[in-house]
Image (cartoon, rainbow, N blue to C red; front, side, top):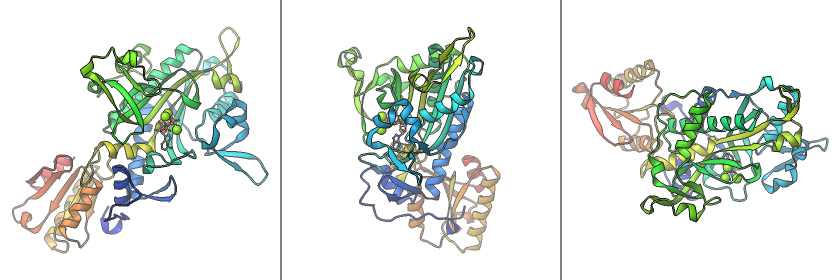
Length: 439
Ligand code: ATP
Ligand code: MG
Ligand code: MG
Ligand code: MG
């Protein structure tokens, strides 16, 4: 992409409405624009990051054997009357009447709708296990939308639902989700720690939240610092193996790590004092096993191998896709701007031309552009007629992992300058060598 043809409405001033760094940088980098409280347009740069995150979520869900689909945003109230949650959900639910007077709502989550789909089409244990998921906009009329996309009213969420014959099978699905989530967050350059949590309006006993440690997080958390040494990494996992998934769950949840809702001072006291931590965290996902809560109230049953009709065991599993854009910035930035992890960056490499209009510099930039593209990379070429300082400031703000700076003086010696956004280190080298480093 060439900057002269792109839409990147960068702000010079710090927007006064933004109180945390991710919100400030998302506005300044022209990633989002608020249209009303907690509701945002995703401008091209923000949209690219959102899609990159969404793609990672899809890839990891599909790898775990979960099946993508899409349900609507608008739901009929009657489904929620069946489960009893229409009244319970309270003011966070946006209730709508259509022209015929039917009660509708903008979905805050999809347990009822997926259970309705399941009961319409599945009747036998032979069709289990089954895990369906979608990535769709949700609406919750949050009392205090704030921090930009981190607590929006309209937000993008992955929600998955497992249907199993027994509690044992459903707990395997739970463990499978835990593993796939660990992989998902690590691919985004994040450490998200599973912590024992409270189930809230979803209901159920078994639940973990995934938290990214950050001072600006809204959750209070307590943990054994040893847990921050754990990494899933690139180990192989067979998602069908009950034992392998169970082992990962045990490895990642045996240390003390809880949110304030389930925090237990007596249990925490067993952690060696020098490893006891209390901190703030951002909730970027949650997994639940809730048994037959919805299948019983809504009649989602199957026939088992003894010809008995039994309610299925279920769980639901969410990832805050749009919140993650903010959470990644909270975890990865400096005083000049964002520092995108490679896995989610909107462009792989910036090209800065120090002397736009100089025939040699222009040609060298064009050649770099094609060379990066031929490696399957997406460059962002700042081809504006601007001073170098302004170009550098924009590149630092939008946080691409690499910048290649091209100027007539370097070209006389056959070199360009390659700069790492994360370390700030610059090195002169031949254009080919710079491309090879980035690729
Ligand atoms: P919170 O405690 O932050 O209100 P939640 O526990 O109500 O979140 P869940 O029902 O567990 O949210 O939804 C799954 C995920 O969706 C959350 O882990 C979070 O990452 C994301 N999410 C929830 N509410 C919002 C929101 N208002 N804006 C952006 N993302 C959200
Ligand atoms: Mg909430
Ligand atoms: Mg929560
Ligand atoms: Mg939650």
